[in-house]
Image (cartoon, rainbow, N blue to C red; front, top):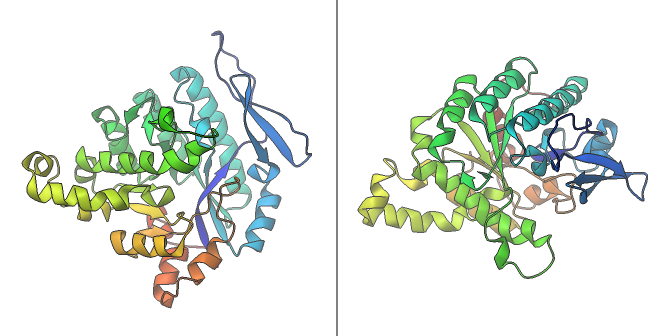
Length: 335
């Protein structure tokens, strides 16, 4: 099985070499357990991560236990660092892309890499996208659901998506710093649990209502967490498109059809919910994803798919074929 949604953190970070003060540059310090490290951002522990975040052998051992043959690996989303000065973000993302490329090159049968770019400066992002695809051999890029509050469907990012389409780069959109955090009641971790789905749904919808998907029909873009709230938003958007002229005018194609141009992981933690994704998006657009190696991950993604009772062809689409199409890999690895 191909796990299309896994994350990675480098085993160390370079020292900040800029002249600005108070920069939330990431660093790594030992944790209480020898198998963990603290990722520090802005002087605070952002997350305690296991050594499988960067250790290839640990990852492979976990893959064997969960029947995963190949992982698509992207940075921990907070490391996208859109809030840094663009030059600082470029230095950080270049370092991460170089390190991720080394992981992929060490085990190309096991890992495919998606890099990071400083989208707070679109020109710099386009240059780094070209480098990570053409020079480093990464398959594409992970982007946040918003860039400092600006949706990915905003016209400012049109040149970036045009460049990604031209390069044939796969794009993975992950929830990041969602809106509405002031509405949550409870521990900070509820950001991931409650706010991410709405954030991802808004990001996906922005590519539809902005016309980005229509202008770039060869874009191969995938969304985390099953597209978040999009499956529940979509019937309402479809109804509005059919009956409200302003909504119809912003999309020259049916929202249902546009949604089926994109890819989605199946990370919704419930068999009935996965069945609904297959009904909404179609069986050609949904692929296995676990959020490995973080605490919220689905610990048995292959078992969950097997329990759906799908025919063999549909299971193969979820387990392998759809991810290969998203990544545009024509010569796959062995199962």
